[in-house]
Each structure stands twice: as structure tokens, then as C-alpha cells.
Amino acid sequence: MNTESASAQISLNDSIEQSEVIDLYRANQWSSADKPEQLLAALRNSHSLVTARLNGKLVGIGNAISDGHLVVYYPHMLVHPECHGQGIGRLMMQALQTVYGDFHQQMLTADGEAVEFYKALGFERAGQTEPMWVYAGTEH
Image 1: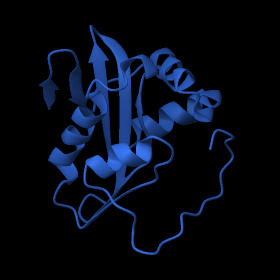
Image 2 (image 1 turned 90 degrees about the horizontal axis):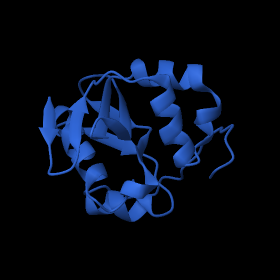
Image 3 (image 1 turned 120 degrees about the vertical axis):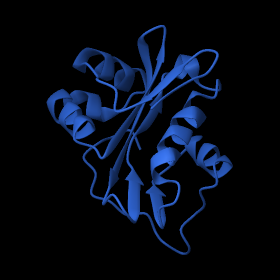
């Protein structure tokens, strides 16, 4: 599936190159950029991968981990900081919704400015749950 806005081409299960992915993760200061082999393997082995490109340049990426029927988790959704506010993240989530929109449970973890972004897309706090993790990064 490909959808195209006036400025970005959004694709599901696009091919990705290590250097472009690492550049995007570094621009967003995500610590997973320090583990390029693991990051690329994780993205490439996701249930779905969504990308956004401007003139061929990778400016957004997100992935979904799913059982394929009932539950989906969206671990990564990044848009290059220079492209924030242009609707690229929204288009990427719309593309993922073509696959997972009817699933019983869609989950993600959001912090900072991302919380309001996801609320605008219909996500809400999951009842009285408490976010928990074992995390090796430093950016949160």
C-alpha cells in the first residue's frame, strides 16, 4: 500500500537501509541508534513497517508488533524533527490503521509531546494501568 500526500510518500513494508534509519533515529536522539544491527533486525522483522519519504529521503518510520488478529503494539513512531507538524505522523498511523484498525486492542507507550499527538488520534490512557518496563536507554 502506498499513499501520497502533497509532500510525503507513505508506504507499508518499504525496504530500508541501515544508514538512513540510523540518521533518523539520531536526529530524534533515540538510544536505539547505538545498536544498529539489533534495530534494523527488529524493524525488518516487525509485523508491519511504515515509512515516510520526501523526495526519496526517509523522514519517518514506525513499526507494529502483532499477533495478526487481536492485539497490536506500536513500539516506534518517529518523524524527523524538521518535519514535525506537517501531518506525516498522522499519515503513517492512518496507513497502519488500514491493517490494525479493527483489532480488539491497540497499544503504545507515549511521553512528552507525543501524548497529545496520540490522543488526537483516538488513543487514551488504558484504564488505571501503570506503565512499566525494564529499559536500557537513557532518553526517557
